[in-house]
Amino acid sequence: MRRALPWSIARATGANAPAAFVVSLAAAVLALVVQEALLPLIGASVTFLLLVPSVLLGAALGGLWPGLAVTAFGAIAGAVLGWRAPGLGGIVETGLFALLGVGISLVGERLFRADAAAREINEKILQREAHLQSILDTVPDAMVVIDAKGLIQSFSATAARLFQRQPADMVGRNVSCLMPPPYRDAHDGYIERYLKTGEKRIIGQGRVVVGERNDGSTFPMELSVGEVRVRQSHYFTGFVRDLTERQATQARLQELQSELVHISRLTAMGELASALAHELNQPLSAIANYLRGAERLLEAPTPDVERLRDPVARATAQALRAGDVIRRLREFVATGENERHVESLSKVIEESLALALVGIKGSDVRVQTVRGYPADLVFADKVQIQQVLLNLIRNAIEAMAGALRRELTISTQAGEQGEAVVRVADTGPGIGPALGERLFEPFMTTKKSGMGVGLSICRTIIDAHGGKIWIEETPGGGATFAFTIPPGAADEP
Ligand code: ADP
Image (cartoon, rainbow, N blue to C red):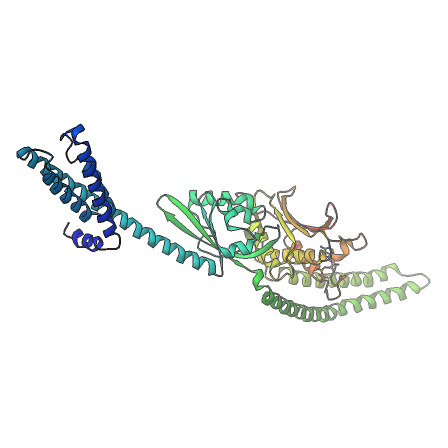
């Protein structure tokens, strides 16, 4: 009480205090009038009873002091009005009323303080919430908070702009609606697995993934996820950065990079061509010489077959040598720094897709991935397979530039021998039968600025992995490039 007293006095002199005094004393006066009026009916048996509500009112409105004031007023009024014949009974009754009044006032004080404290806390919470909201509304990254079931708890203004959705519609919905299939269907499983095993795959580390806007178009985004535990509940906060917003610079960077690659490829090709010419010149001229000698022997009226054997054998040896040179060069290109490991195919695809979508002008291509390879693990050089996928995806997007329907589907499937079959299907103009397999030959291009080496490099890489690459027709029109990769060791998802 010693600590409460100054606080109570301070408050009793506050803005609400006079009102509490006035209202409760007025109620007490009213109670006295009623009591007086009813006295002939009820007698003095309920003395002070009608005053109790006024004490309660005073304590509830103003705490200790208004309560005590009404108690004192009631006790004095009761005594003055002489409801009971003066004597011990009257004194005891007045004393009991006074005690009751003090008790009610003390309890009222406590309740009043608790109420004020709650209001203060509420005020602080509201202030903090407003502060937090202002941060969320202005932070450049989009923010989405979800619970352990994947249901959205909060959706920031930037997230609303980014995904073209209304925050009010999003709260309570599953976050998976912000991602394209198959991640959409797998997302609940990711959370469940994390809650069960505690194994962090994305929490605490940023990753480039694909997001889906309300209109179904997809875009590359950088996602980092934080985790909050409130008692038994789990919440996850996802910060999303749109990578297409950096498109202009990225695109320029990509252009510069591809120019660089173009030049370095040209240089490499030039070097390769001159090395090839140099290496092949010798065996070819040797072959020509041997065959010319053989020809001369054949000009004789009765050619000596035995003497022919030697130049033909030598020409054969030189031809094999030339073949060796070519093989060696191809091996050099293909296996240069081939580092093969067990890799997650879906992750390789996801990353390649995100990389391929960065810097693509007008990202109005609908991208779909269909995961049909149950083992998921492959034995591959990740960087090289990504190069293949990047090349195929870029080709597909370029091919669909003028098409009405622009749909890119990357699907996986298990092959007959357990290998993974990856298909990159587009809805572009497709590839006529005249071109077909020839596209895999070096320098075969239909583009003005094309080099025509992309697909040939793809084939070399896939060959080096012991796989195959071929072209199919997309059902409904378009081209599908398919290739195989050997399976990884472990057979677990
Ligand atoms: P580049 O892209 O430099 O021309 P590539 O070897 O990657 O070299 O492609 C060779 C050719 O194959 C292209 O010029 C194009 O005509 C054709 N092509 C590749 N992918 C597709 C596709 N998805 N749809 C139609 N044509 C394609």
